[in-house]
Length: 144
Image (cartoon, rainbow, N blue to C red; front, side):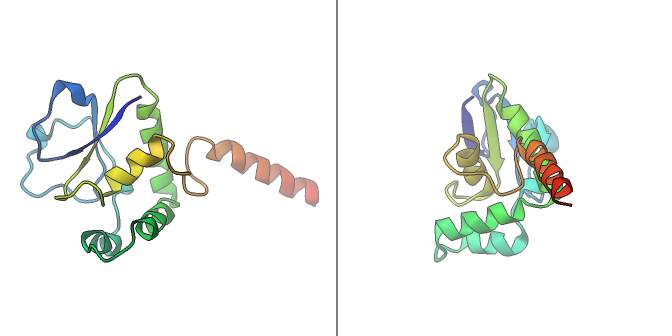
């Protein structure tokens, strides 16, 4: 399951596999047909406040990643993250698209690291969330 990161404005290629846009807003000046997207997950895009931090080079990468993963704790983002995990589990490659100029400080780069197992997923998200949630409910019921 190779995961690639590519700028949304770059020309699509056959080696991209499934193309997923992980930006909250549609990239300015990019046509829907020319993007050749398979999926758009705006829930996985960074908030506007975090987006400003990502653009400034003064912030630490680990702190930004922690804040971004904290944003993924919402039910909508968790659902979108589970969709992304399902796409990544397939054999063909997944290309995460971003709109910024630099790939290193984008949600796509952080998600790539997460999908490849380099980082622990945020608490309460990912494919194991449902199983963990039911175990917690059973433990609470037993305690009563």
